[in-house]
Image (cartoon, rainbow, N blue to C red; front, side, top):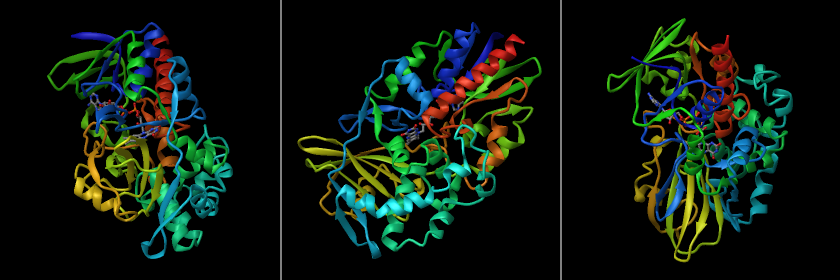
Length: 430
Ligand SMILES: Cc1cc2nc3c(=O)[nH]c(=O)nc-3n(C[C@H](O)[C@H](O)[C@H](O)COP(=O)(O)OP(=O)(O)OC[C@H]3O[C@@H](n4cnc5c(N)ncnc54)[C@H](O)[C@@H]3O)c2cc1C
């Protein structure tokens, strides 16, 4: 049987960074990736005549792990267009139109109050389970917004802004997600907003992940789906869907919480993984690219969390068409491959948008991810995170779901890969 020091399962950002670091420490590494490409939940595809990010996109220099990789691989960043027009919904869903400043003044009070205790809840964003978060973690983001008693217009606008951030109905999302991100940005909501939706990597995320992959000294095997892991105190045997087996001294799994049950692990995964997998994390929404006729002034639009597309903004403006990106809370509420359904969703704001094409990947239905960007349900952060970071014998866990700082983000995936590479190296040396 083939043997190696370490098997890394998954070639997303967590797996690639873990493999690179382990290789640099002199360990023999094999990366097993089920897809026919690296990058995982980041994927630049040529669709609608453009290179579009179907998955993770926005990065920021306030995210230290991803920024270090951007510097290392000489990437540049590009700003998404600044909006000239803003659309939102008033009482009774009446369409409203104004400027960026009009919209910001509508949401400012709510946005500030939603996260005003971020720095006492989580005083140090790198320790996200320390602080008054231990008492607050049972609360949903919806409860926090309900407590603010906002008028209908401000409430809809604030809720849809948060759907854009957390990608789920707000009653199922823990307040913790909002507080973590606000803590990571010094309690300053506009900076948090900028960090999560403004700057993308020039040349695309696929080229970025390929650059890391090229730096991995071990073997990256695509189209290699792991079906089983048998582990004991001296090592593990990993079985592939074609029946092949590889033995390793250590294994790093980088699967999202929602997808870990696709691998039969013996002895079974720790209880914390099984429970979180059964419950699922909160995020369950959509990201859809939309091509509309005409050169439109740059705009953004916010509806409410009860609309299938809650957030819409222009990203690319051409002579005869514009490319918009939309986000909604529930992938079951809209078929993102249907031009008709997307057209209907846009009509809440304006009737002059003619949809010519749509492009999306349903990450929730994809068995290899079953999630978008992770946000916790109420209570999951403080209950689960510290334990999700613990190795189970020779079995280690990385992935954005296990990160301290920007959990759920590309930055968090990289943080987790660095962490587990260090722990595996130390274990192999000992
Ligand atoms: C629509 C969308 C928008 C997003 N927007 C942003 C954003 O703007 N900014 C941001 O920072 N983050 C964003 N994210 C989140 C970001 O993409 C993720 O946090 C990050 O890519 C996760 O990396 P990872 O390595 O932890 O997991 P993944 O990328 O999911 O990697 C896990 C890998 O394991 C592989 N795998 C699974 N099962 C098996 C198996 N049985 N055998 C072998 N391989 C297997 C998968 O194919 C995958 O490649 C977004 C995500 C989505 C889906």
